[in-house]
Image (cartoon, helix red, strand yellow):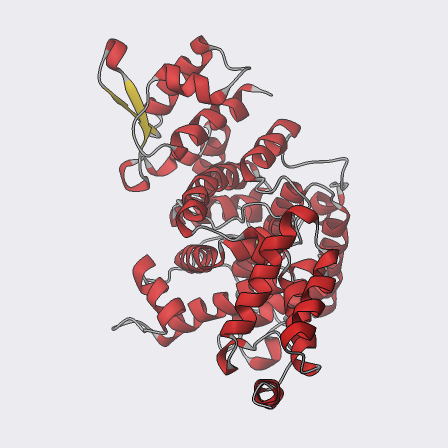
Length: 445
């Protein structure tokens, strides 16, 4: 592993800590492959970069990660990115108008060319993997669903200038409570994120990277915010990008052709993180839709992460100005280094936050892992009007398909659900209230 990913691993480890820790504790938690001299140097660099704070002196020295409000704005960026950003932050009249660069897209060959180095991909996978077994697609996203829903909706909307606070977003999404003094468009933007995220999570097992999936995400995100005829469909007119000299394609057929090529190329990419950042970059760059392109790119970047039970990318701790600069660097220069820096930094931060979320909610892995099997058994019991010993025998026979160590808990879950079943809890079972009532009535006979 090269130095930069190792340095990011040190930062990631510090992000996991609730209290400041000393150098020896950091080295112990990092494990083999980390030399004290190098870690000490990286810590000194991160202190200068405004990422880490040093507390105490000599043997009592401890370190902790600084929160976003206490860090310098450009702290996510390395030296190469800062040079690129300096170019795109010059006045518009000093920057040359540019069109879509087909040659840049054509030069990328899936699984041969990479935006993320092998060391970065390994580091991200190590940080983002949350399952030791072959869990059903979307298991982890279900596990942290409310946290994902709030964080991704809030951060993705915030990057578009939405003024809802994190608390306001939570109340809107979970309680339906609107914030006073906010625009209707802001409320719709957040609620649309809820629908798009739910679509990703609920359909994780059958999700693929395709034009249809990308267009569906755009439809869900743009519904009520763009003309109905352009929701989920490429535009057939020209658009201009505020604050940039980039001039996207105007012809609808050309846009559709290129969106298809993006989906086709992305679908071939095997590494989930490389696929994620490829979609983030190229959907943003093409600007195929009348509006809501960057939001569509951010949600599309989560397809592979949700599907393979990796920590999703919620764009936590990304400064809006930094994000805009990284996007413009893609538009005008086809330089992806700033976006890569933001992607890695935010992902590592998100991993740390979601670890604490899972610990606090006491996730029941058995319920999620065998959700479909449990619901199928309950549905059959109700439709066949099974009760008493016949019902118990059916549950035991059906549970034989569940692996040994999980079977007892699975049977307990089925039994508990049957006991608690009412009209408010039949969603996803494929039964009607009348069929439920008929089953319950059979107990009276």
